[in-house]
Length: 569
Image 1 (cartoon, rainbow, N blue to C red):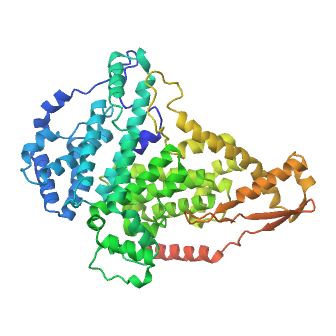
Image 2: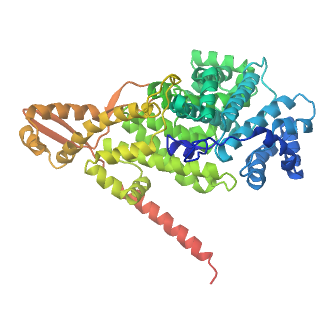
Image 3: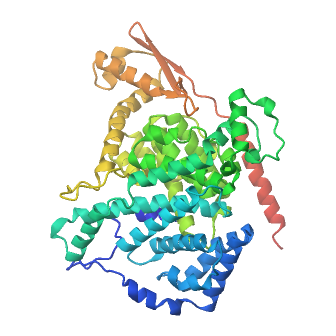
């Protein structure tokens, strides 16, 4: 579910324990696990599972939400902190033979494996990974092969967690497979046996299968058509509800045709399919970013409103919104759309700042950890973007940035290349190769190769930006400056300086905020032009608005006074 730390900390995450001398993997005895099911099945667990099933069968969304977000996590903490939940086989007899039984068992199994990934010491075994994949295949086949929408209502948070966990487990499997294959034929016998199993099951967690699921969910739900209409008109999200009063006069002919298609589409009217389709778009954004295809990542979001307030109307899942902002901002950063990246990062940080209390869920510590980590990663990426493209940002975020990251900012101002690399390494997603490894021979750098490729692209930009940073600092001090004099400041010839200034001018241009726009403009604090061997500088920096500062201080003073009145004397 929320396992960012397990992947983000290190490419060599220990999915299994090792003995330092023998390098023998600790394998979980699945037969022994099954023998212990009777011990795990106390009355509280039995009652929870029965109630959980009845809530899903009767579509009681409030009770499902309570069982999913509180009941499951509370029992996990109390009884299954370091062990697995009861297996599907052991609870099957508790569930009556009704139409909802099969789908409930699949959903339970999805949560069962998610708990193993999150909590089991040593991580999941290869058998766990295979079984979890097959369970996802069953789940998505049931959803996608249905001729009519499934009669199933699930909380939005659960639907997001299904897509999020699906991609996480694919990412985890790719790293685990690469790590095992890297050990080669000289590894212990049990590892060699696993390598053979991986080689024989090349279709398990195949990238084409994962992408096919996400694209199929997008297609089945017609989510892009819904978002296209929503993006071009002020309309309630009940767009797919035929009973809603919709003023179609505000739509173009093309949009009216889309609306008619949606009104006749039962899958588009189902909240289950609609939200799975929407979350699959975010999944495609994330997956393509992990592969380094940033254009395709942004293209997947072409009909999605990136404004957080508009996202809240659809998603209403904080972790989804933060994930969306993180990957969209990172894709913009790597595409050199710095202004758009900065706006997305700042919006995300303001959202986290204002909803931090609400996001602190005591029963979901992993969610809290994930949000805290992504918050810090976004600050790092924002710092990098501002170093490349200085511009005015929200005062509260700017103050926090200067207060908490003052040392890093000083290093960046001095042109510290290593500091930029360290920040990028911490803040970037852990990239994947879309193709399986060569089982006959893997190089030592195979696991790091996707990261190294993206790092090379980033360093190419860094090397160009370091010279530009020096020039920008000099241009801020003058209104006119001879090219020869500026060239002497940076120890370059006038001809070399002209090339650097041309590069500077190019770097200042950014595509407009519209995701598919190709128009360029500049919002840099410094603009210039060259005429008769002279550089003419125009300061475009907007004067500081002191009114905002005083309004915030007045609000803080009022809050302090209110709190003081409540203090007993």
